[in-house]
View 1 (tube, rainbow, N blue to C red):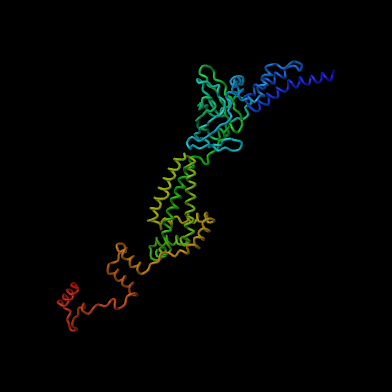
View 2: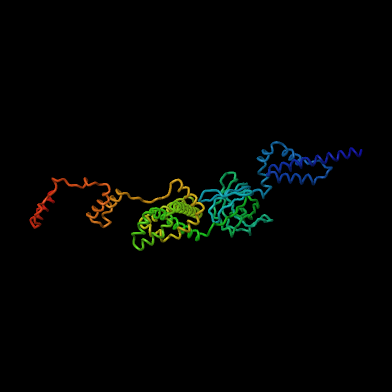
Length: 449
């Protein structure tokens, strides 16, 4: 008899525990049944062991343990939300993107969004906001405190409240446009939501959790704005310098520098003497200037992109580099390359030292492939043509140009080439007197021939 009573007691206990376990299991699978499962389990535990299972509990257990759990949520979700106020404004995830640059924030770790401080952003929140009526406004703010135990953050706001615009009829996706504070004011932001009601007191602002996927982390700017602007201006000057020196120094070959050193003015000799040791390593100088120019332009573009939007950064950096980094300095150095190169020779040597690990090996490869730089070489024909082309600038008379040209042709000409035919020769008797009449006759013959 005692054995039979023991078996009956065990069966009654199983009859009570099985629906409770089933409801709890379904609540783990679907968070919308959490409140219902807790209520069912609490009623089952309060029931005496000997009492029969209440019909409502059995019905709930039967419904939640069946395969139609999702349909049950759809049919009774409204009543469940009414019994669970904390569920009505729960955020399950967010997405953050920069409004100006139209690119999303960096997501690291367990899903926390990282974005630059003081950025204009679009924040989309995903959750259940069905309880917010059309005449009410859902407000979002951020707090820097992650351990608000009471669930309310009315006095813990680190940012102003911003209205949430619903993007769908079901009120599951909302959008907020705002300007983020600085990293010093809000290192990590946690979401707070509040419903603004026009006809009565507003509801308290509710803390939405400290999980990574519902929080943002602000990153400080690389440099202060004023320092970034100064760096951009300095880099723009360096870009123009390297571009101008690339044209000015490379246009002065070894031959030109030797000519200037030997025949130039005192100032020109001084400038050429400073440039010659550097210019003798032509490929090394070329690689140094190009590496430095690319490095400066890339750094300047990054700084411009850091303080402006993508399109403006592209346009502004392009215009700045083309106008002030290419056209103007090259126009100046093409005419005054000797002076510019000599006065900035120490800057050039400094960057040759900085870029030595990259520029020197590359220059040696170019030396092997292209050979040693010789400089300009002038043949006899080029020298004669040089005299003719520069006749308006070198200050020589035509007779002097003719004599120089004749001297250059002496090696290639024979006596036959310079002889005059006997019929064309004007001859005088050996006893002729060089008086006025004789000289007039000679002049007449010369003019006629």
